[in-house]
Length: 415
Ligand code: GLA
Image 1 (tube, protein in one colour):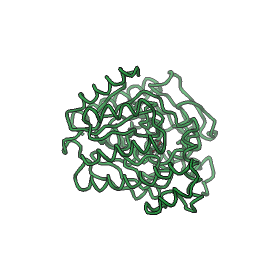
Image 2 (cartoon, protein in one colour):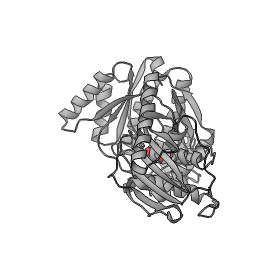
Image 3 (tube, helix red, strand yellow):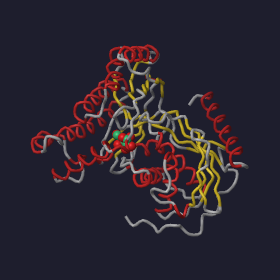
């Protein structure tokens, strides 16, 4: 990160600490940040025990946090309606709250449910991660709480364990049956690298150097502003289709289908399931190809891999929409090296890999194409691989973490 971007982040964290003071009185114990993500390649593979290659965004959710000894959880967001949501930690259960508060409350619930000795806290959030854009704003919220609680309550959990807690919050508390990619990206990504995730063993993730600028490249995010919502059942139906296909093939997960056996599997499977399987198997191969190109120092070679990934999401997984298809074709028409829809699908954002300095030109072409088609103008921003979740303010804790609560309000999970 450049010194000026670092300075901006530090000032933002100080502002959030000041806001905390105005909202709750007194100082927070610290301010933590967790980023949104874009996935370079490897879409809808995580819940099939497969591979993905996300990067963290410079856009983050900040949380100013202070532990409480009375077991109460208070939540406030600069992007909310100004009210403070207050909940007793011991009474947290799925359904206890609604809206954005489900994500942070879900993380505290998931920590307690897993047997970690956590209590209450005052939390104030401020986020620059766009919501509904397929950029994992909910994972950023969850992971900010996970890293803050980890420190506030002296848990010392490894990153993948925090990501698992955040995923559990989203699955069981917020009711979205997502995989683990977004939370792993938010917690475990590092600057100037992509995260090579094997969703079967997230603890063995690897950092793959991705020096965009050094290779004369840029990455443009095109938010189509078609809101994507994973809670509406379509995502769950896709996941269920994949699980059914794996069961029919006698496999633990689609990740276990070797590419060489794909043609036979496609002949054996019901017509509705075959294209899902083709997407997952070819997408896993695209991740491995992308990783080997990056490791060989040829990031530009990602271009055609991204574009092939989009075709697979459009034609086999069938989760693109006219706006995302148009963003991809307009970006390619303006000279992008590759482009694809990123994230859960049904709208959201497209990423375009391009030569550095061409962001403005490609963005203008996409905007003109949207205008001509009668779509709202997309939101555009250039990104580079940023750091995962971290403490922001003060940089080192000035006060020792409070003693953990004496007993966990829930029994330890056995599964
Ligand atoms: C959403 C989910 C992830 C993943 C992607 C698709 O972002 O939260 O777990 O399944 O969709 O790759």
